[in-house]
Image (cartoon, rainbow, N blue to C red; front, side):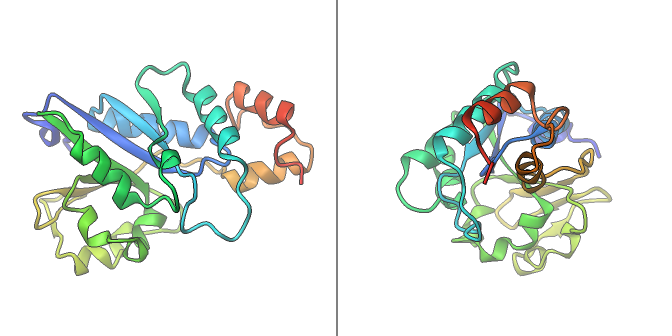
Length: 222
């Protein structure tokens, strides 16, 4: 699909990439890079969730440690940035509040994209004020194993229409949802935490600086 038309008339566009990043790994970084290149984003901003509303089944390590690991992971890429917008807010980290914040602060000519996985997109109707999300920015849905975003109920409930033969769907507000297939990585934060508990190496799974931080801080041992 030709994405050059998506940014026509816009000086620059930014992508918001949220997550707990517990811990951040090479799959996160590669996905962010592929999205940036595919949609010509000037920056991808990593949004660290302080208290994610959908992940209450296990303890999450301290925000400080997750912040430090993301900062180390993106340090060598000037097109990646880290935001504390959800850390500064009290209570749960709702995407509607984060997107609204960036929407209010857009400069003239800027475009705003929200990046999420197909798994999250398929359950987006459980999110707070989800109907408002598509009126504020464009969405980029990245592929996830065993999840088909074309089956997401929200495409019907929110009256999206398919644009041409590509993987782009238009919302009545004029914003869009674009589906992007990214390089599959058979790793997850859950698996990485298990590997640490077992005392195995994280080489080639996370950036070296992140591995060093995990070991020095003694994270995920229990």
